[in-house]
Length: 285
Image (tube, rainbow, N blue to C red):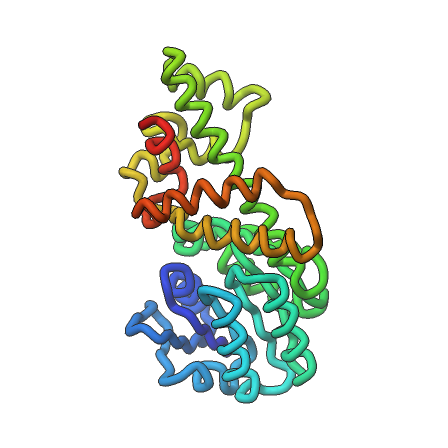
């Protein structure tokens, strides 16, 4: 396929590289001076999108997605597929989907889970919203960039799944860190706590796969001075999206709201570039 890839940052560049390595003709664009192995660089987003069978975006927020879509949709050929892998608000995803469909293009919102490591290794999970036919067209590319893709429903459903997932992640990481901090003060060794909790009712991804305590469990950012696999500032973004969505449908999400406030405090204290599991040293201080 001819693929235009817009947004060659920490996530987009390895995703584009993997598509090129699989034999697709990938043309990329980013506002920063970046490169990706095997990816030709275009002078503009429109140039990257022109003549492409598929346009993929990986962008910071919904406002930028809307602006990029307004720019590139007129340059895209009828029948092309627009896949947005950014994490943005549901309303922006649905608005761009409607615009793309009205112009004769397909649409999939497909935010990802797996972080920079998953993008590089091609092991991301995609949460996809859009028409089933468009999802099926995108499936081959998802197989290259990731290990799993779930069709969650109509346009916007992928974003809904992502923000719900990350609200759970943010809250469970905080309570996992609280439990370690409490265990420390009670004199319970961290390795013993892990051995118990990881095989009992406290089991969670935050504990078992991404333990916030250094030297405990599988390798995680805690073992690398909390250099980010997923930065606290990004958790603030995702929890904020979840709270905005919650307010828009009058849902009750008090733990999600409190998790957002705690991560906002982390960012305000200058730790936004630390991994979100850095909550443990903060609570242990």
